[in-house]
Length: 241
Ligand SMILES: [Cu+2]
Image (cartoon, rainbow, N blue to C red; front, top):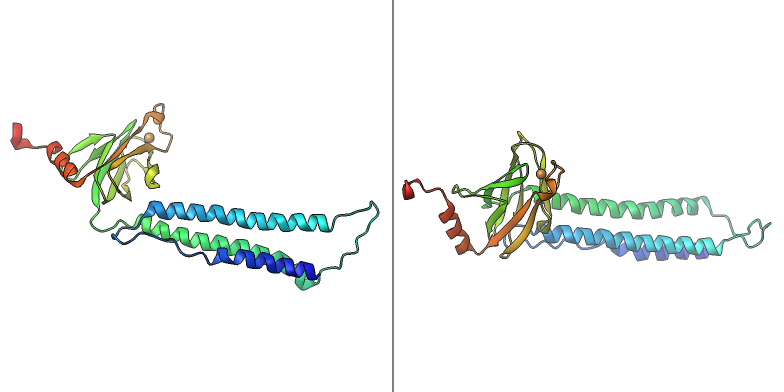
């Protein structure tokens, strides 16, 4: 009985820090939240919690299995019976620990989700239209590209999504964002472009024979270079006609 009590104390005190984890450290200094870091952190937290709680419960179970095992075939068992209160405790305390952690993580997820759906002010808005099998991109100035999403560095980018045939899913794995492109519907997502470089842009919804070939690049460019590209690729009627 005393041993059971001390074990439950150990289990409780070991799991308490899980419930008091600090919130997601979001880099919000520059205005736009860092969603990538947020999702990564939430994922790691989930993994840690599952492992820590899982190991604690597995060890307790193992201990009890060995401690109270039947030693002889005709042994009836002499361990003290648990009181009603202790029985309830053994059911509800572990269940509460699981639930508290679930609710805590769900709340963090909800907070992050809201940030993911709220486009920061001053975001660079770009149109992305999915088709079988690629992405057509239109910039505010009229510059267009296919399968090359050029964006300026360090800027929140809002991609307005549409589809001209079937359902596609616009997926930027490095930015941890994905959203459906639905014919007849306007959807969106946003991401922080970050440092200059290239990232995968792909379709994550089976959309026909060449679905696996439906991918392109997000090309993050230094600001000046990007402005130059947009200017050079904008339709300029007075230039040559
Ligand atoms: Cu597709």
